Length: 156
Figure 1 (cartoon, one colour):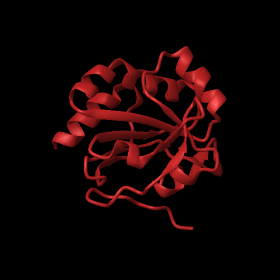
Figure 2 (cartoon, rainbow, N blue to C red):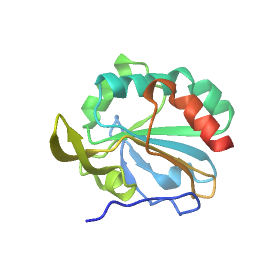
Figure 3 (cartoon, rainbow, N blue to C red):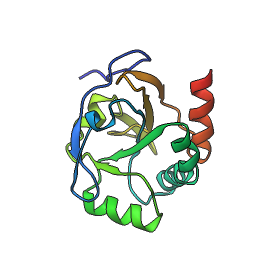
Figure 4 (cartoon, rainbow, N blue to C red):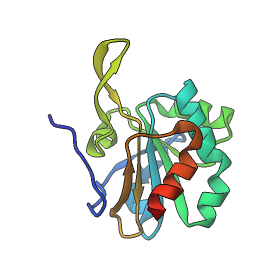
């Protein structure tokens, strides 16, 4: 199956799932709002923690600019709850255990690690505008400086 490649202007693929509390979350919940949808491989791993904490530390700035935020990984709701609590993350985390959202957004595909090829989460951030269209896709995420990367990328 070829990797889906979303581009600015494309309609954002619809999704439904559950968050760290087992509550339903859907793209339609964010209609009329700007959404930063960030896909990451695994809770409580170094790079994923760095990225989530960078977004946490800048959450108020992003909120003032009208952004909502949703993290997505294939981890369970219980894993997400521990990750969110440990790092005081102010945004929901979607438990995409069947990888449907990851695949719909092109954030699941072939990776290489230590010379081994496997399918996994491709660290990606997708910004969706108020009309439900893709505003920007970041497929080379700078985990420690992601907020600036997003804000500068949207200006350019």
